[in-house]
Image 1 (cartoon, rainbow, N blue to C red):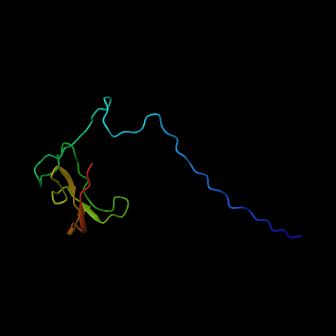
Image 2: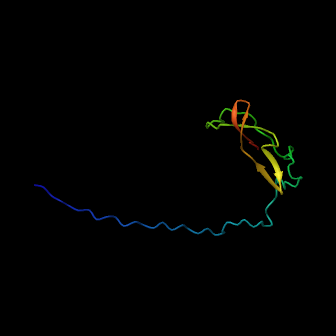
Image 3: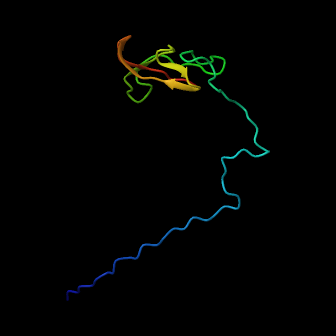
Length: 104
């Protein structure tokens, strides 16, 4: 005996998020405490404040095959108009074809 049975297409079920009691906010509240900041208020073209930032320098991929050489030069990391600029450049530098900056 052969039987043919059809299965109806299942109806998708909507997943509704459960609201939290306090919505997240980006507005500072009285219990917030500033623990670190950098306003990048140096003159345009100046280096970053090395009391707040350090550089990872070198090449070799950093675990994911990156092609650039990370430098600590102001060619690759500097302040402009109150912001940190990290600039990748195509250039031959210490056996790499690109440079950039990696900071922490």
